[in-house]
Image (cartoon, rainbow, N blue to C red; front, side, top):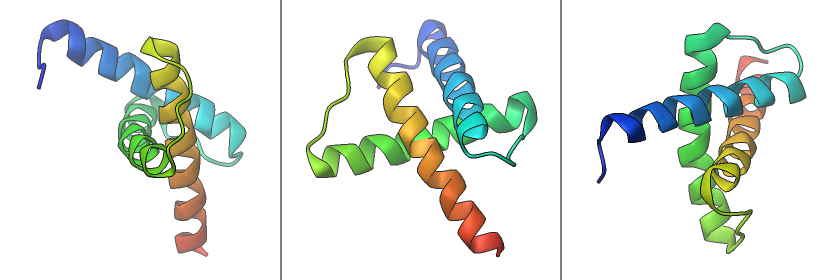
Length: 85
């Protein structure tokens, strides 16, 4: 696994963007910068697992990572909404 400073910065940026996008799409959820990054990182893991299991690939590189992380973060926020009710 690559744990270089650049990889960590990319992970934080992708997580932040994905968490923010998911918060905009699933209205009512705003967690601030740290929360958006956490939702985006967990969403990235969830999105990669779900989309990989389904055999779907949405782009490559950073754009693909943001798309997959955003999809996973949306699923995560929808699951949180169900649990909170």
